[in-house]
Image (cartoon, rainbow, N blue to C red; front, side):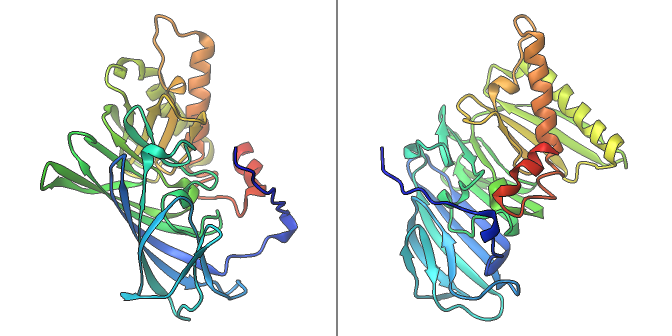
Length: 324
């Protein structure tokens, strides 16, 4: 094991970020052995910050190129950060190209491989293993995500928000573009790519909007998703009736993974679950199994507003979003 120096973080030491990122556009060329990530950040100085250089978090990334407003720029990579000493006073665009190797990511944080499919886990600091970013919960941006991959190997391409475009590319590849209109911290980013089948249902919200509910699982497990779908519908109705809160996206997705190292994760609009909290075989499932599925599905859905739209300032507030 690697020796790591323990760092003590105190709540009283909190300082606002020196920079804010209002929007990030991500393009992934997905492959388990070599994934390239092209990110364009819309950055501005934070009036509440203390100034200084722009420092972006990054871990296990191979940096390819950096451009500021379309021009090459001087930078340093040190101590797990990409640092730009001189940046404009006015808002600017920063484009960064980097590469990662998901199949070698045994930390199961960031982008990793599970049963041949690609998944992400970004809470608490996994996004820095995907792209350079100010990876803290008080930096909230809107996300536009384009996924490109071999159609035969990764026929399903999912990310946060609403699907706005998809189609074929040359050489047997295809793409999907997802837009999340609501600002979110980087720990709520999600990406899933692979071979899945879908149990889906269209329902109407309290105001009459039609929304799409989807549960994605490995082939052969579709018949075991019925109770999870019922639980999701009940959670949606309860949030509407109890708090007047509707699903704010055009769709809501759950994906089951057998190797997910947490019970479930509330990524905005794209929850990733350990399969034990999604799949139930009526012939062998116990009352306890059904209770776990219902409680975990509801817990993660309720995060759609409490924890996602209204989120943490820092990780000392974790108990607030989880307890609410």
